[in-house]
Amino acid sequence: MKPFEKILQDNKTWAAEQKAADPEYFNRLIKIQSPEVLWIGCSDSRVPADKITGTQPGEIFVHRNVANLVVHTDLNLLSVLQYAVDVLNVKHVIVCGHHNCGGVRAALSNQSLGLIDKWLWHIKNVYRQYKKEINALADEDARVDLLTELNVKEQVLNLAKTSIIQKAWKSRNGPDLHGWVYDLRDGIISPVFDMPAGSRVDEIFEYENL
Figure (cartoon, rainbow, N blue to C red):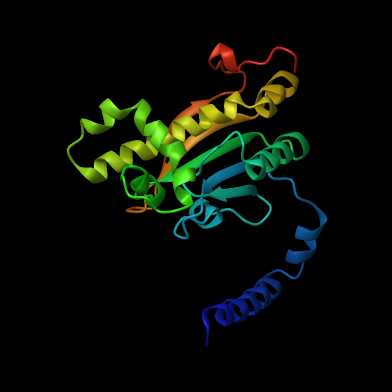
């Protein structure tokens, strides 16, 4: 059996099991979507948002990309953010990175990987900002772990710099922003940075006419 065929077969098994255990399961999902959380995570197949948080369909709104970046020119990310904040009225936005992230590790090298170099450029800029602190660590894995945490922090700050978040902070004092890191070694998520609604950012990024 080919891998994609197994996925389809497993889907049918899963759907049958869900319906047997709870006949109204799918009817409830059709009627409403009201998550309180937007999750911005890494595309890494080892870090599925619902699995590692123990949440059910409908509980979190999810966007994933390589190394969980918040890039101000990424219309995909911004569209998800705007819908989550303005339409779904989420109360929290979480940026979750993970240790042993391939994107972060690649960004610490000088090897060209093709088109993705342009995406990893954003992580390299985080490294450049904290180069002295990161290079003080002798162990490569420790440097990757630290850059992972600092990258999460910078992506939370990038969220706060968007007009989408600042407008919501002024109109409804929400959502709160959180930076987390998931450890593949033990399955535990650790908070590394938080920005409650209304937090200040560098004044050049603060919009007055929202």
